[in-house]
Length: 122
Image (cartoon, rainbow, N blue to C red; front, side, top):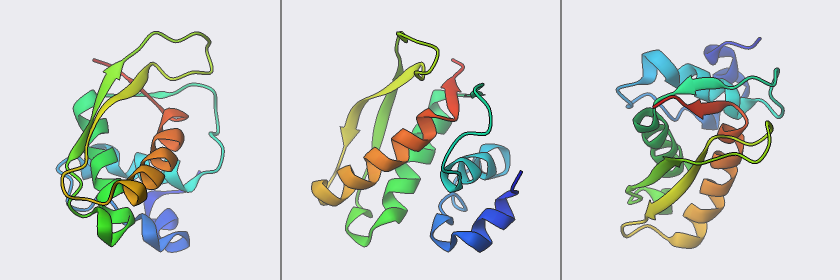
């Protein structure tokens, strides 16, 4: 398994979570999941919704200079139809003055990758 530092060496654009207050706890795991193309196992790790919302917002802000004004997302627990689905969805997006087209493109990639790795615990 690749550590967070190894992921940074291979993918330097993933330096997303240094300013997050949750960096030491979960930031490294999120960076690793973004670096992977497929999850290593079928079980997802548990994460609090506030941490997930902060991680998604930080990743979108860092994805493109036109997304720096992005405010954040609302994540809500949802019922899954199969074991392959995550138990959460993005229920709201606050774009602020950020360019919606660029932020939507980054958001879709980030959310798809994080849905493969994490479940909401609260």
